[in-house]
Image (cartoon, rainbow, N blue to C red; front, top):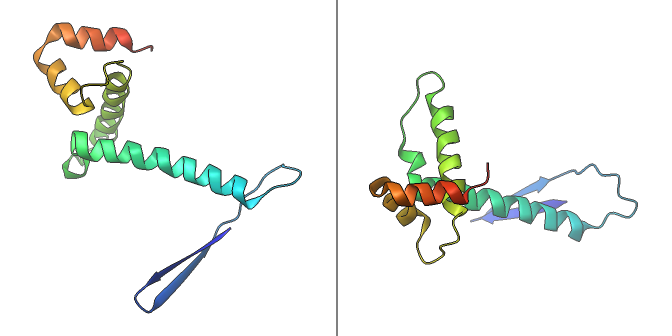
Length: 112
């Protein structure tokens, strides 16, 4: 699969190779897989940046950055597991920080 990006008068072409055991592979199939993967990636990274301001975090010593990233992803999954769709994830996390009963409700809704 190849893609072209044109910025101004400069054109860049990227070729991607996929390995598969499909009998009759079709480009549309691989495009669907790639879009699905990047859709999930973009949504996760958007939440980490907007909800947790991960890009502004300056933890650099030892494994602190990796540890904080893991905790943020866990907190995001716990907040997403709550069926309350009226409240944004950011507000759920804020409410949980102020109300221990709501925090317990979030934790009870999450299946470890």
